[in-house]
Structure formats: structure tokens, C-alpha cells
Image (cartoon, rainbow over all chains, first blue to last red; front, side, top):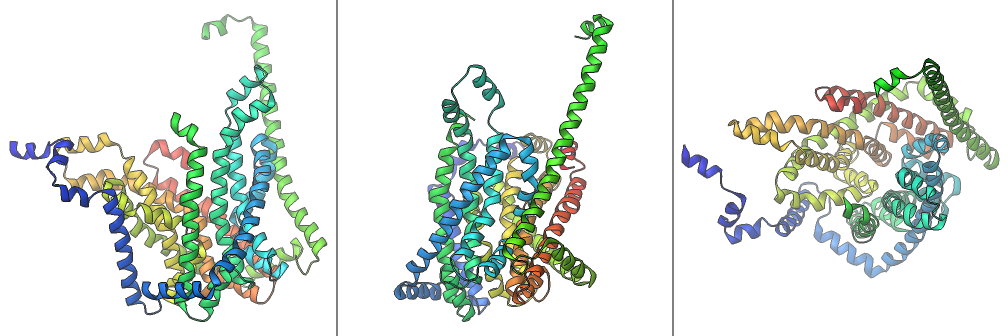
Length: 273
Length: 284
């Protein structure tokens, strides 16, 4: 009985010391990530073997090389990035303006509430169908789709940020007659930037899906159009190569750029918390 | 405090009551003004739409009442019920798969540091992958069948479920587990009586959170290759170049989504959480 209890009541440091070095290395975080990557790769191989239509890794890498060799990658990415950039920029500007209005007054919040709710519920596919029917093939329909799918997400985030500006600090600064410029710089901006950054991140993720859909249906070049070309040709390897490209693009953009920007913008809050 | 109130001269008490009455009046007036602005928001939307259809022409943007008539037609000829039940069944089947796969992953992520590191990258990356990738990938795997949308919904929602459950497991009252151990409960008992009841609400919250996303992905997959369902109907209208048809299905789609989200899921969640008194008020 007593031996059982002794076995159970070992402290965590004792357990850590008694585990051998190789075991500790195998259960470290880096090893776990590596194992996850390898298991994903094996899973892909198995799925490709079971479902004949799913292209395997070798085929995808080959097709990827082919697309680069044909010079299709950079031109199409350039076209798409232009549309995507304009759409997200427009969504950011409009989103900030409307979001600030919604955050500042209760009445404008009541006014914009329902349109934003409806906007949030409309799927990107509807916007891409409508814009293709309205504007035809060209740059306009992807830009408008990106803008319309992304703008409600920016609005709600900015509105939340503006509402979150501390009421007490606002009252205090008006009592001590802090000049408007300083009040903006020291109170409003730091409180809002984090939310704006989070809103832009949403806009980028949602808008990327929107621009791909609009290009898929409105055949006028771009990443989505090229992916559809291979899909329609029943060459799923080529399609999967493009999937690797546009998933890779959004993951790199999100992890390396937006995530860092957001934690920078929120650092005043997370440090104090 | 109360003594002071009693000591007040009677005229002051009357004054306080009168003040309360005016406060109540201003509060109700403020509320009425707010409702008026909500109504104004709806009216403005319809007006913008009317103006748009006048500006671009009714062929490009049909007028609101035409779309409403189209919606009535869809509701009348019975397409609506069969297509929506098909879509809803597929969505919930996908949720079932997502809960069955995502909850154990979330459990592992919440309990053990190793599995947390193992799944972390995959789960976060899965959240940023565009919906179109899920839709087309599911089609490539399953072809034109009902399994495609189910797989797409499961792929989209499983990361949400996993993350939420992991969060829930880590938030489990540590003292409950310590106490169970002190009273010699077995690991199996702890799992069944402490951990699982804590997980269920988190699975449900995840499903409610990602319902909108999943519903959109389901429709998207049907657009690409469905033989029934809402997405299939939207694609048919698109191929017929019927803008009013697309708009009519869109509004039915939104209305249906809000109804399910607000009524069915919120009610079910409230029932599931009824045993937790502190959660009940927020869920309702």
C-alpha cells in the first residue's frame, strides 16, 4: 500500500529527472511538430493511395514545377494581388469609418446594426455570382467581391474597439481639458489599433476566399482562374499545386505579417494583464 | 444609508419619486428612439436597393418586391422545404463528424503538452484555409455525392471544436480533479464524471460559433457539385442568369440561417447548459 502511494506522489521535478534524455527529446514541442508534419505527409500518401483521384505529393510537386517553368505563377499572382489589395484597402477604409461611427454613438449603432448583420450572413459565393452578372469578366467583380465580403468584419471589430475605449479615461481627459490631438494619440489610437489590426486580419482571410471565388467564376486571369482551368481539365494535380500556392500564401501572410502586427498592436494590453 | 432615507422630509421623498418617474420616461424614450433607428436601418437598406435598381435598371438589379414575389414562388412550389432539409441534414451530419473527430483531439490538446504541440500548427492553419479549397477538395475526394458537403462541413468545423474543447479542458476546475483523486476515484471515473460534462457545453458552443461558416461552406460545396440543396438551386439560378432568383434564394438562405442560429441552436444550448446555473442566464 505504502509503495503505491510513494509511486504516485513523485514530484514533477523528480519525474522530469528520472526520464531519460532520449525520451525527453522525443516528447519536446519541436519533436511533436516534426512528428505532426511527418504524420500529415503519411496521411496524404495513404489518402492518395486510397482515392485514385487525389493527387499524391510527388505529382503535386511536379505540377508545381511545371507551372513555375511555364511562367504562369508570378503573372497570375500579380493580377490577383492587385485585385485583392484594392478590395482589402477599400474594405479597411470604409470599415474604419463606419465602425468608428458605430462605436461612438448608440443611435448610429442601431442604424447600421441590421445592414452589417445581413452583410455578415451573405456568403462570398453569392457576391461573386452577383458581381459577375453585374460587371462581367474583368477586374471589377473580384475587387467588389473582396470588398463586400470583408467590410462587415472590419466594421464589427472597429466598432468593438471604439466602444472599448475606457469611459473613465475619456471623462477624465475632458475634465483636465487634454487637447484633442493628445487625446487621440494617447487614448483612442492605442485602444483601437489592436482591434483595427484584428479586423484587417479577418478581412484578409475572408477576402482571400472572396477573390478566389470571384476569379473562379469570372474567367479573366488570376490565381482562382488558373486553379479552375486545371480543375475543369480534370487534372487535379495542377489544381492541387495551386491549392498549395494559395494556402501557402495566406498562411505566410497570416503567421508572419498579421499575427506579429496584431501582437505588437495589443502589446500594451497583454503586458499589463 | 437607510436611516438617512427615513429621516428625509416627506417633500424630498416625493421629489425622489418624481425624479424616478422622469428617469423612467427618458429611458423609455431612449429605447423608442433606438428602435426607430433600427427600423430606419432596414428602411435605408430597402431604399438603397430601390435606388440601385432604378439607377442600374431592373434587369441588372431587380426591385425588392420582385424578389419578394420570387421568394413566395419558391416557398409555394415546395422546392424550399426539400432543398433546405437536404442542406440542413448534410450540415448536421458534418457537425456530427466534426464533434466525433474534434472533441478527442481537443481533449488530447487540453490534457497533454505533447499533443498540444502536435496539433497546434494544423489547427491554426486549418482556420486560415479559404473555404473554396475545402469545397473543391471534398468534391475531388468524393465526386458528386452527398458525402462531399458533409466532409467539407466536418473539415471546417473540426478545428473550432478542437480548439474550444482544449480551452474547456484547460479551464476545468483543478480542485475538482484533485478532490476526486484524493477520494480515490479512478481515472475512468474522473473522465466520465468531471471531464466529459465540462466538454459538452464547449463542443456545443463551438458548433454554434461556426454554424454560419459551416452553412456557407455547405452551400458552396453544393454550388460546385451538388445534386440537391440550397447551393445547387443558387447555381441553377446563376446558370439561368436569373439575378432575382439568386437574390431570392440568398434571402431565404440568410433568413433560414438566422432562424436556426437564434432559435434551434440557442435553445438547445440553453437546455444543455441548464445544469449550470451561472451559464443559464447568459445562454438565454
